[in-house]
Amino acid sequence: MKTNINKAKVRLQKELSGNLTTNSAMPKDLIEKLVSDDHSFKNLVRLEPISFKSQPGVLGRIQGLDIIAGLQKLNKKDCLTVYRAVRFPTYKRMNEILNEIGCCIANYEQERIMRLYSDKKYIAKRNKIKSDHNFWTQPQERVVDGVPIFCLVNDALQIHRAFRKQKDKVLIMVIHLPFNLIKNKKIKLIANTAIDLDYNNQDRDIEINNFIAKNGVVQPDFSALRARGVDLHEMYFKGLPWGLKACEKIGISQEYFLLDIYRIKKDKNYQSLFSDSNTLKNNAHFLHGFFGDQNVFGRGETRYLPSKCYKVCKK
Image (cartoon, rainbow, N blue to C red):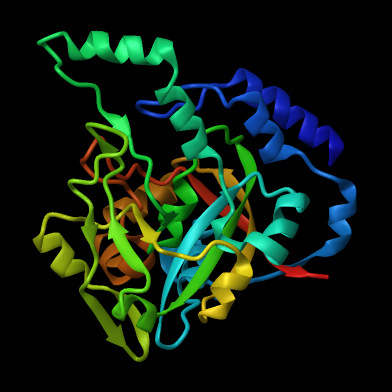
């Protein structure tokens, strides 16, 4: 573990993030927060191997779609179930999630972005671009006033592409929010843009008020959102209490799964799935957006899928 941690630190210090508008390295102090570890934390975390029902046809020939589909079905009655990804899931960070922070743990991506946006060189370059009448503006990646979450497991899995290896690990949080908390406006669910004119521009943010309940399972009304021009991808909770105990106190429950992930190679099975419209439509509950969309600022195509899944529990 120590050797892997040291390799991760070296890699993070050398690599740029690859983001569209914030392509920069990770600051050293944030690297320490992300990948620092202590072997003793391993004794506090239990990893239980989990398997899910195999998928039929071409779905079953693409490794990991069974895991994505299985996690997507982990619903809880009268709750809105959403997902969040945690990168660099060291034993230390997993222990913090299990005992203290829960779904509010930081990925330090927004912290990295904010430091870049306050950097004098960045500001000067941005102002220079904005003064050119051929451009007038330079879009910025959003920093949201809340906890970023996703309706789809696959969207959560793909969001942190920066600094990943060909084979890596990510932790997926499954968050069950009692619908009454949203209905009574104690917690708000906000759809946001990924890229905007300014990092804190909330003009195009939309509070999600339309939901559908079927067999006790609650989800946003995607058709109502699309009628307003929103193909739901990125969103965030506003008003979510900080910390695990505060969330539990108002009925929010959470599950955690560690995934071994791999970078997809586009073989014949992958291409076959792309061509099979009926399979995509019939499995839209977990495959929506698998091949990205046409918006350069929106959802990209799936690049990583899981190869193994473990439930993360206290020892």
